[in-house]
Image (cartoon, rainbow, N blue to C red; front, side):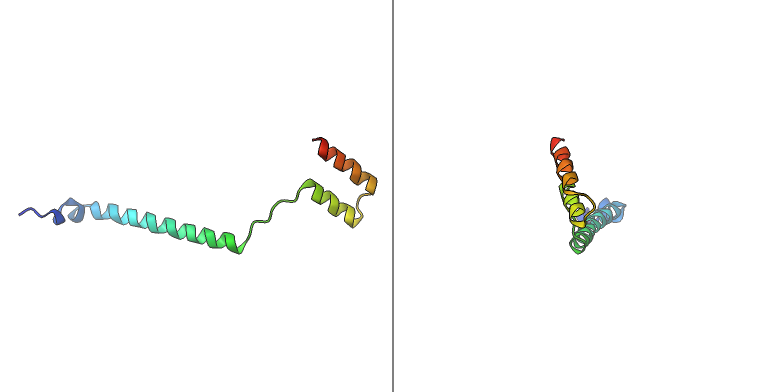
Length: 78
């Protein structure tokens, strides 16, 4: 009697293939979950723009008002 249940997929190496498929599926889901939680824990901080840096330097007194105006014109020209 030939039963479809006991074919090569269950008695041979087919179970190893299905184990690999399940392992890849579960590890992919786990990796997505870990990376999602890690990105929520450490939010992305956007880079400062050149004008923001210039304004901070002016506020700290590192550059004068004339330097600030000249540097802003240089940035706008690019």
